[in-house]
Length: 179
Image (cartoon, rainbow, N blue to C red; front, side, top):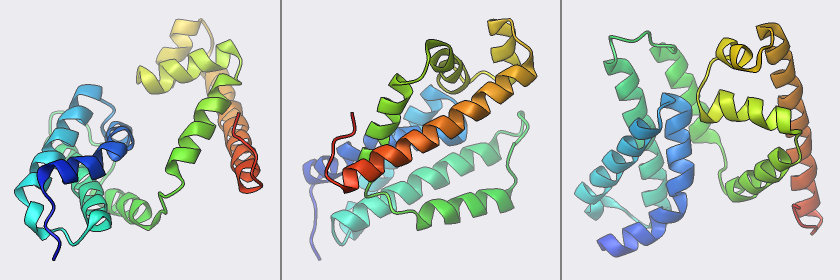
């Protein structure tokens, strides 16, 4: 078995950092907590550094530990309503386990490019909803719009982003650039 030292482990995991923190944020919706979960995952990796059979095993294990820690925190927060019950968390976990993440950097680049192509108003709505973590009604209030109008605008934006990302990824398959 190949034994990796801490610097090798960090070299393998650092390219995953942004994606792993993004996953934690998508589950927890709190930036500081997402960073804490990432740090917890690294601590567990270092505690178990002798078990890894190679870089891919390390990556897979780190993602699983990160997700499990997020779910653990959701379950522990009894003071706050849990949005997802255990059966839903299990389904989400199974879906994430089955995904091929090899094209994640290209998808992230395509998403950034597509967001840049949105109107200023759409970008602002996305920023408030996903980067500030506001609810749709709060976004509507800040924008002076009706919640239904914001929900419809977000739905149109989701469709436009999905179409844009697919086009950009298809262009990559033919050798073109994302921009």
